[in-house]
Length: 189
Image (cartoon, one colour):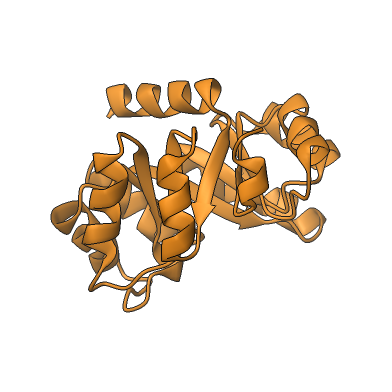
């Protein structure tokens, strides 16, 4: 697991923009991009194995956002399915139990948090300890990112509402190790 985590962190340092894809067209373009990590934000239990296979064949790291895969649930069996039936490098989820179970199964884990208020901030500090990385949304909040990177021990990824290059630069300058975006125009930043 330590080797996989090291490879993931190095991939984000080498190419800090992560392609987050929500359809087949986006996946095709992400596979051709310079991004080394792909977040799969779509799919079903029937096609997720094939989606991951395409990412792996392109030589990229594949992370499945379990909360967004049709047919998956918030039960541990979803993490078990991904670990046993795909070649995914890891999962993304807002659910601590899925993060815990996926780690037990040797998958890399990214716990996603939605930053709405000061209670959300406290929630990140309280619940993030089991994940390999923390993903906060929206990612266009550098002052919050700056505070979080001082408090959490995992690499921090900024996602959501990144509109242009200045948002990417601001998030990375604030201490995020990478940004995740569905904006294809930003994949080459």
